[in-house]
Image 1 (cartoon, rainbow, N blue to C red):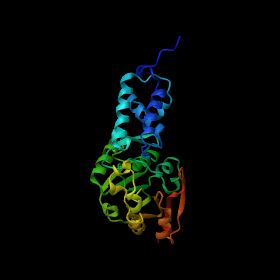
Image 2 (cartoon, one colour):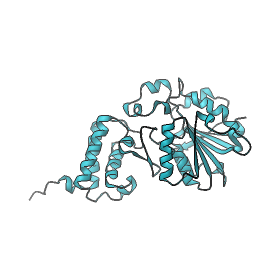
Image 3 (cartoon, one colour):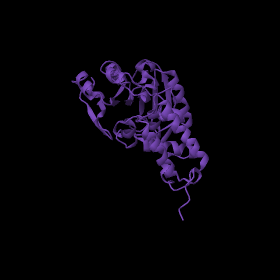
Image 4 (tube, rainbow, N blue to C red):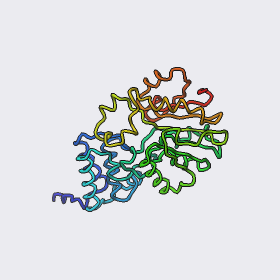
Length: 300
């Protein structure tokens, strides 16, 4: 006898992921907002509708998904295809280094190679016990939260120009019980912070600023256009805000402090803009030209 045809109610999680991945793959979507390809987004969609983290879902691939969660997952996939919005906006949640964050169009989807360096301990030499850190351009607060979770004995300040982004950051702080360890400030870069003095300098400043150059901004796919342009656009060469950041960083850094900046694909523009500054290029999964560290002594 031929085997019984499978119905949606009998499909395993792995089979559902495969089905949805095929639909996403055929739609010619763009990825990079917390998932690298159709398979990753399909896993994310299915896990969400089962109430699992993507990591936990990978341990449950043989379980039957069930007709209703599968139907919901199909609706989400269709919304992803027709809207061309980042999946994190559709689900209201993003994952970064295994940690969940509320996500909405108030802020760009949390993603940063800096997160890798926080979690793998690469930044510990610049984070003394009871030290202080600043997340400049914090967005939804994800990097500040990862810092606070990884180094529970430090105090973290986080600032952003966007009040809607900070409202989202506040929700994420509440979600992770970190409202007392992480302090939020609103304002344009350094203007958000109190005047620096000997008692309020930072041991480490991290920053994932708007750095996309004008040509790249004009060619962004729909998924990136759905994000606030304020959080992406870095001017003609991508360095507009980075110039302001580096110019004033020495005033806010402790004597042995350092500033870590993500520049993405703008390595050549950075080298042209700052040929005189000694830089330590940090190794991340994408290579060694995406994130740089400058020690305070090299900024004076």
